[in-house]
Image 1: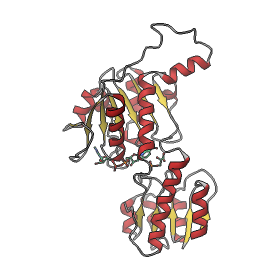
Image 2: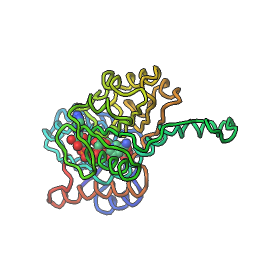
Image 3: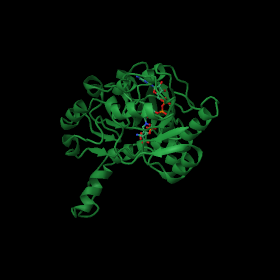
Image 4: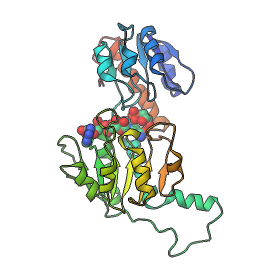
Length: 315
Ligand SMILES: NC(=O)c1ccc[n+]([C@@H]2O[C@H](COP(=O)([O-])OP(=O)(O)OC[C@H]3O[C@@H](n4cnc5c(N)ncnc54)[C@H](O)[C@@H]3O)[C@@H](O)[C@H]2O)c1
Ligand SMILES: O=C(O)[C@H](O)COP(=O)(O)O
């Protein structure tokens, strides 16, 4: 099976791919354009793509293709037009679960960083402006007892809920598009608007893509408390970035912690200029152990497919 790996993976994953398949490792850090994706579909039997490789509908124009499977590195497949891929006869697979704890940890980091003003404090210290401990210096928001409102109570949402409830003594409420029974003590609310109104901290954990684009817009941000924080570890375009910047600039919400952006790696200058935001460069799963686990899952999907078995994680 001739395999294209679109980006540099952890060495253990590259070694496995090289040993098991006739693998071509693409150079460079830039994702495939739709044109390059279309060309790859003609040239390879299998592709291991990831975030930023744009398998848009146009990439699937003019089949049939040599490629039969896209084994994505990552759970999020909003960069792949899955319906178009399936219509072209391809299997699409992903890596759920491997990413969950690491991404939930980053959500917790963002909650603490925003509520307790950690980025701001570190910038002050590094700039040599710290004058010593003061009873009223850099007072943030105490998170114990606050209500976290989780938008999208899937694997990551529930991992955030566990951390908030058991680790930080927070109340948990959530909005999910379908009823969801969860093990953590938590209250499911009937509408997104209700969740935005009651939460002290809103954590966004829905999948990206057409169905959730702009889910958190002007009205949802306006529904938030002026003391509220928004944390997004999902995908950038779930939140209307301009509306978020306007809400932060006007002080209509207290702050935001972001791991993802609408047009990565571009981060609006207006957002970067704000003190009350924490901006991470999409670090959700960025540990070697987690990236290796993601790679193993993607490669397991390919091995199963090559052996004629059902792929363990079809999308
Ligand atoms: N920041 C990062 O580095 C990072 C890392 C991993 C995953 N992610 C993102 O997180 C997403 C979630 O991952 P997961 O494994 O928890 O997925 P999941 O499928 O387990 O959970 C998503 C949940 O969202 C719900 N949902 C979907 N659409 C909704 C809507 N419109 N309104 C309310 N709820 C809705 C689903 O019912 C589901 O419960 C991924 O798709 C990916 O884009 C980001
Ligand atoms: O941080 C990540 O690893 C990226 O978001 C890709 O992984 P995901 O598709 O699982 O989010």
